[in-house]
Image 1 (cartoon, protein in one colour):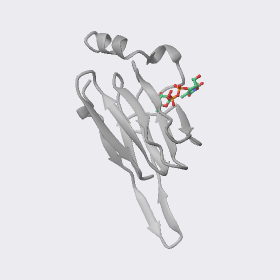
Image 2 (cartoon, rainbow, N blue to C red; image 1 turned 90 degrees about the vertical axis):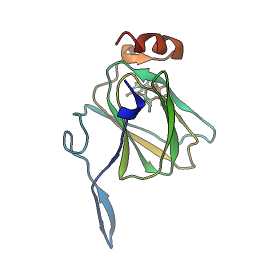
Image 3 (spheres, rainbow, N blue to C red; image 1 turned 135 degrees about the vertical axis):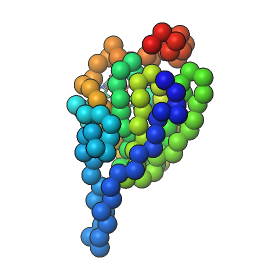
Amino acid sequence: MSIKECKLLEFPKISDPRGNLTFIEELRHIPFKFKRVYYLYDVPGGSERGGHAHKNLHQILISLSGSFDVVIHDGIKQKKIQLNSPSKGLYIKPMIWRELKNFSSGAVCFVLASDTYIESDYYRDFEIFKKNIYLK
Ligand code: T46
């Protein structure tokens, strides 16, 4: 898997004088069906989250409020993407290491995930992840 396959997706945005509305339909605006949503919030300044890769899970990360950086790593190359818009989402495929940092005050990271929470789907050790990228 390459970081090149992790794309920033742009979702529909309906704007009118009352404000903005964004919607996301599975298999139309994102390339998978989602079984779970979760969100990170009240993240203290300086905290970092993530620090793992998934074996099979597909995810979309969206900044519903504020901003934060996502560093993605495929075992060879890495890239930093700042998420700061509720109408954009970062698609992270399986076998990509991710770290979330530089959360602004009040930032909310909303996640659409292709499966339920399965701890055995995680690589939480970077060296073990790197060894396994060649086996997948
Ligand atoms: C990811 C980044 C962006 C659950 O019980 N259910 C869940 O759905 C999740 C996501 C977590 N948990 C438990 C597991 C741990 O005991 O919540 C605790 C904290 O989870 P974790 O340390 O994995 O949290 P983050 O913020 O480092 O990572 C999470 C996701 O786990 C991960 O898939 O990509 O957010």
